[in-house]
Image (cartoon, rainbow, N blue to C red):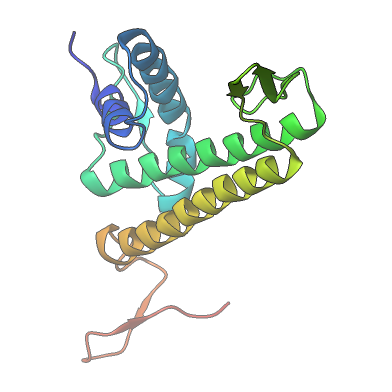
Amino acid sequence: MALNQIGTLASGVLEYDFDFITGAAEKSGELTAISGTLSGDLGQLNILINQSFGYTGADGNPSPRLQEEEEQILSQIYIKDYYFKEARRVLRGLYDTSSASAMSTTEWTELREGDTTIRRNVFGARERSTAARAYRDLAEEADKKITELVYAYNMYGAQPRQVVGADTYSITGSGSYFYPYY
């Protein structure tokens, strides 16, 4: 099965950023979720870099095609949003004991029978708060990376939208133009 550009980008995010996900079914489900979110984040990318990427045709590829810089910004947008959502999910577990979470509350912490002891990890409020803070820090790190990438893109990669127009005046003989203040 050939992946479109967004699917290829999602596959890279899954392989390099979420390499802890194993199993064909889990990878397939996560790949679908990542590519769907990346497709939805294209509008946010447009806003950040002042472009107009969209979708045309049945192949699902963005038009015009994303270049390497735009792909990097888009994947960082996904990663930032992922970590913010994870931080909220962990914190929600502090108050909602019915939420399904890797850090859900347990009924027992230790069982002893004779000389055998079974100890289960329990994540209390302090551990959850620490985990949420770690996720938030990762999201903020991704946000800083987005800021740096967008700055570099706008500084070096964006094409000028207008060089000389009807609303500019020339200083005779100098070749310089200036915009009048109205």
